[in-house]
Image 1 (cartoon, one colour):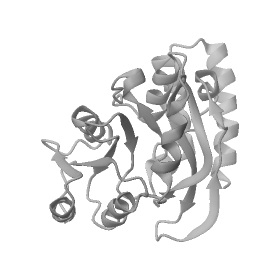
Image 2 (tube, rainbow, N blue to C red):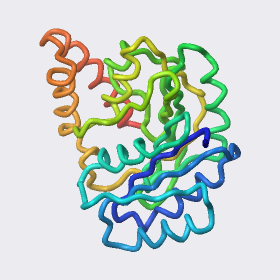
Image 3 (cartoon, helix red, strand yellow):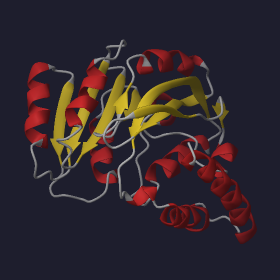
Amino acid sequence: MSCFSIIMPCHNGEKYLAGAIESVIAQTYTDWELIIVDDGSTDASVDIIRSFSKKDPRIRSFCTEKASGSPTVPRNIGIENAQGRFIAFLDCDDMWLPSKLEKQLPLFEHEKTAVVFSYYEKMTEEGKRNNRVVKSPSKVSYHTLLQGNCIGNLTGVYDIQKVGKVFQKKIHHEDYVMWMEILAGGWIAENTCSCEAIYREQKGSTSGNKFVVFKWTWNIYRNELKLSIGKSLFYFACYAFRAVLKFLK
């Protein structure tokens, strides 16, 4: 059994896929499996995945029956087939820095820590980096998350030995809801307080439209968490403030 199961959804990711896979292979901590789930790609993604899996037995691949249009479906297929104790996530256009897993593993020794995450750096779609590091608190609770998602999905890892396999719901901001579901049980998330991943900003992505994302968040407060209007307004104000600060980075 691998220690880490890394879930990577892929849909027409040929442009950046190899870089994402290579960033996993370059990890200084080597006890991992990479589960790549192709979601109906029509480009060369499947060929790239096969070429890597032939070279490295730690890389396993699956595919959806048809393109789902959502990262939730392939991620959940990956979670279902994961054999490791720790579930991590990396999209096929992002990258990790080599020390990520090595630095995260020791933090799980705390009995109340079910999630470990890190800072991450933004880069342009073309891969240009300018030290735009998104930082977050050293420790995060359920109450902290209500004020905004400070766990970058490409940095987060959770411990199934403590919380079981937690799947993502097919809604917008699916990772945010998943982290809250985990921490709602009284667990905490701990930060390495170091930059361990690189997030690629895609031009024209829906998640880059702040008004759309605000709508998603309001839906989570009211319809997923069933918060009152008053509490929803309070936490939404906190969220909006943090979102603007993150956008300015």
